[in-house]
Image 1 (cartoon, rainbow, N blue to C red):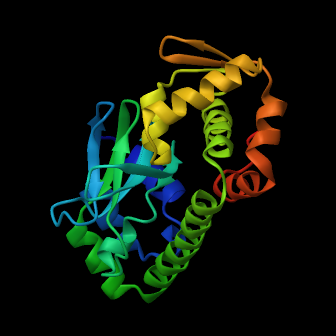
Image 2 (cartoon, rainbow, N blue to C red):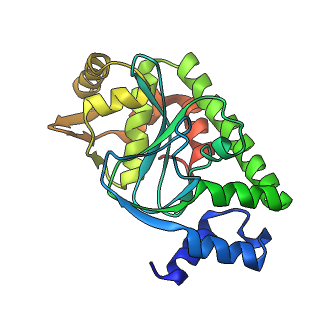
Length: 242
């Protein structure tokens, strides 16, 4: 991998890049690894000591999720081009609160910073560690708001929110998504999602196709989504999901 590309990804993705010494930057540029993954690849799990230290998506899209002992999953966040898997830093700082995983949703090119190198960096550079802790705390605060939303909003509102989010991320009113994948995102069952989507279809809000959903009346879905879930998404994304 071209060193200039690696440096560009590090410079864009690491919030503490400017606080690193020349030697630390040199180590990161020369020892980070660019890896390609197919869709559906699990590239990080906090309880796996063999997981890479820090991951930065160069191209593609991945989801951050937690799993229950019985195998249910709940999506907390999605990250894309030049974004850092923030919660994974907790594994390096021995501050893991719950098991968080990172899985690709499209073919991804990911820059991997080895765990040993990350630990060495945080041990030697107080500023880098401090900034990492700050963004980690901010990320966990947002995660708690998401969990609050899950606890205190209806599944109907959350399904509407999921459609709006997917439309925003894809840049299209037609989204490639299955009922099962929405259910996995929301930590519910496919049957519940299908029932709600059929209600949306009957109300003229969406058109259901095979493995696709066309949003016909986005504003009505936004109304169902509600102000609280809209506020949560505004915390996670650079502009409102509208």
